[in-house]
Length: 337
View (tube, rainbow, N blue to C red):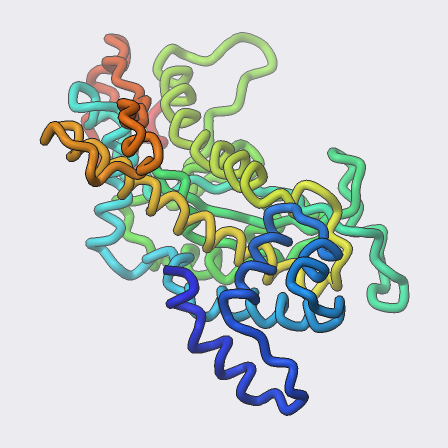
C-alpha cells in the first residue's frame, strides 16, 4: 500500500537523476523503514550493497515521497463538519452507550513532545542553548501534536526549540491562528493539559487550589477530561515504540528532523488503520466460523485458534453527582462554577 502510494514520486525523483545510480523503489522503501525502525545505516547499506552516500540520498528521497504521497494521512479537518462530527463521535463512544452524552464536543487531544537532537552548531544557530530542554536534560525540538480517539495523528507542528513552553509553541502555529479566528465551530473543542491557555476551542482541566480542594463537579470534569487527553500520551508511546529512530538523538541536519517526524506519524496512522481493518476482518471470520480472513495466516494454517484482539473501552457509568451538570451547550460548560 505504501509503496503503491509513493512509487510515482520516487520514480519522478529518479528520472531527474543523470548519475545512473537508480535503485528499485521497493529497495528504497525497505532502506527507509529499516532506518526508521532503529536499524543501523551501515547494515542497511551493506545488505543492499550500496554506498553510504547513495543510501542516504534515497533515504531522504523516500522520506520526502512519504510526506508528499501520504499527505492526506495527516490532516485536521477544521472546515469539514462531517469529519469533525465523526471525530467527536469516536471520542464520545469511548464512554460506552450508557454515558455517551456526558462529555461532548471533543475532536482532538493535543500535547507536546521533545524529539532529541545533537547539540546545534553555532555556525547554524545564533542561540544553540535555546534547544536545550531543562526538563529532559537534552537538546531537542518541541513538536506539537494532535490525535484522535484512535491515537491517529491529525496535526503536527515542529517549529519551536526544546526550551519553549507548550503554550508558546502552540500559539506560534498556523492552526492556533485559524482557531483564534473562529474557524472551529463552537460545538467542538480540543482537549489539552494545564500548560495551554484555556479558550472556547481549548479546554483545560480546572487548576488545583492551593488551599482546599476542587468541588465534586470540577473534580469529575478533570477526571473525564483526562481520559480524553490520555489518547495523545498513548499515541506518543506507540510512536516511539514502533519507530525507534526517535528514541535516540537524531544525528541528522536539523532541517530534516521535521520531515522524519512527520513521515513517522503518517506511517503510524497507516499502521493503526490497517490494524483496525485486520481486527474487523478477523472478527468477521470468527463469527462465520472460518479463519480464512484472519490477519494471522501462519497460525491459522497450522490449526491454531486465533483470538481477535481485545479492545478495552471505559464503559463505567457516569457518577451520580455529575448528572445534570451537562444540561447546557458544551461550549458553555466551563463557564459554570
